[in-house]
Length: 437
Image 1 (cartoon, rainbow, N blue to C red):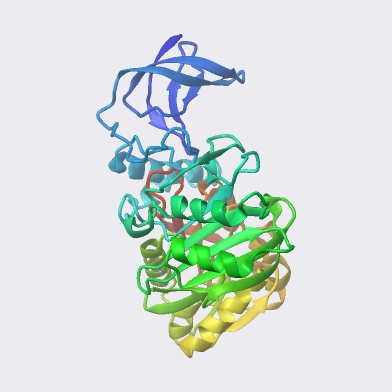
Image 2: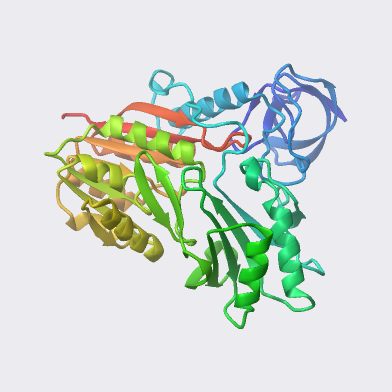
């Protein structure tokens, strides 16, 4: 057993201290300012991981977690840390990544304070519950921290209070529906809307026979909904391939309003899980690109149109590129309903961008893996005066920042946005400007 002073938070959820020999110790569940008794559980040579045995002297920044599943469920690893310290740590994570990986020496001056667009709890418009394949009867929950094991849950504090007990209601309904049978349900997602009050239940299942009418009736009774769908999928969850969507009841899509625009989103399509945060991202992006009716704008990884629709209202021409077929269909429908126009290209960004010509401004909102090197090269060739990069991972943002610097761009500002309170995740809007513009 050793005693440690906890110094700071690491991106990834753990806290950091040091051994007497100078090696770094990563400790889950600790808070900067804590003094803890801990035992080493993993020695990797240059660093170790330790588990808390006792908090000897708690930090003034340590708070009581609200969720009864904290420390077991892997979803919210920072509930024990004050929200002020969380937001400071998220800014530091962006600064550190830009310095270490992006070689941006003046990152301290370029990274703004973290913006807090929403409440600390109840901010998510979507959760995705996992069905436990090892359970004798159907259990829905979240993955245990660092494991594929499933922790059954009855509530989620990150959902709005009106639907926070959705996990319990859905588990009960599906257990009754299944009886002794196997429904082959892998996941169940719930989406709820602030503006429209829509609520969609999506069952992610293997293809095959399914009690559609009974499912619609029981789920609709358990949780009042505007849409109930079944998403057919093949392959492992992490590489899931959607083969179809069946509408069991209601509209067959979820609707929400963000930044004055209306969106209809099908169950397989991505949409930001923090609605108020999405509105803040749109505001920042529009401020950073500052387009007008003379500009030609590219929106890469456009999704259902979170940025495409507001850009199309301002720019002279907008080209949107999106790979997911469901999102392409949603985007076209959303543009039509909004009576605005953009050219929509369904395809992989790395293949499509090279033939699209010059642009005045570009918005990119890539997945966690960031931009393919070919996309960065093509952006350099397109020579936009400004690029607004919306990132969900500081490390890949920093890597791509270094590549954009080589293409003749300079980072002028980065704004962290706390889209995911109680977790280490941070969204960042980075503005890159052509150096010789």
